[in-house]
Image 1 (tube, one colour):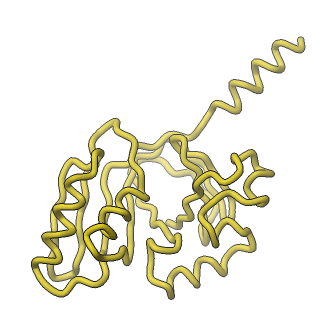
Image 2: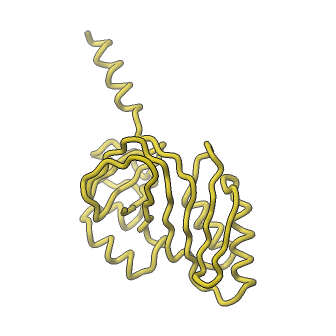
Length: 181
């Protein structure tokens, strides 16, 4: 009986919700000319999991397509923009979700990453859905302030697991992405 319980616990802990992130809409801050846009475009195209980039110069928006089946690292997208000399003003990612239950001010593991949902209603994500990263350096300071005020959990300030997260089984100091729908 003990072996069955241990096996069941291992299986349950190993279950994570599934999503395939397909693309992102990224707004950059600090652009002043077409050369700025070109620099960001070139930097994004160098990211290993990026399939292609389309640019809307008028809105300083980049539509980034991701390679299918390749893990997406949001911090790598941010780093590419910053390495080009600019900052991210908004990053919205679109994924295909398979019965992912989310609720306000809760952590959920999706494809090995931990997401902390803020200002959302309890719901099940099914099919194509866009989520917006609201961590510091992924939105404007004003937007960050609005979303960080929506939780008392300390992880929102650092983007890293704190005591609030580890009690939910999240590894200490692991990356936490704060998102909204």
